[in-house]
Image (cartoon, rainbow, N blue to C red; front, side):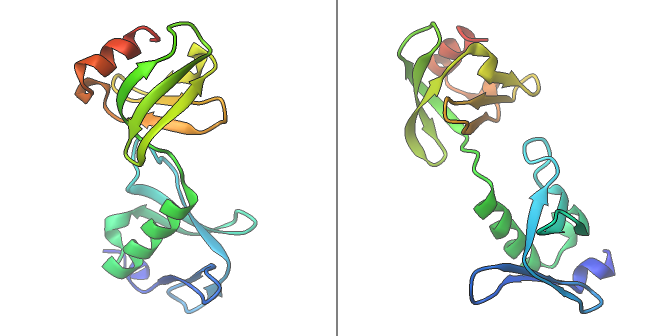
Length: 158
């Protein structure tokens, strides 16, 4: 384990702003924790940056942190990121874009507006990124694990 990563602090102050204390005892505030690869490798390559985007700390893998610091960094990233995962596609208003999709996400049921087929990006053989008409990005983490009905609807757009 990297000893420098074991001797850091990452927490929120009374006003809810995140701060970072380096292994040398230098405090930086406010800071953000940013994933380098939020979809492909969410546990790897995390940077702690200041308000100007200057990197203060590089974390190769979250498992190199103490449990308490890891929990706080994950909490900070979760507050900052918003990428619901589509679990099921209930239906579509039309097979021609623009159309409305009724979906079940890991955050509940919702509908999204698909303006064009180009708003569905294939990141790998099984991972899709769908951007709705409002700019919200939805993730389909594993196309092969979706139910048959959802895959059949998605096939009409891919």
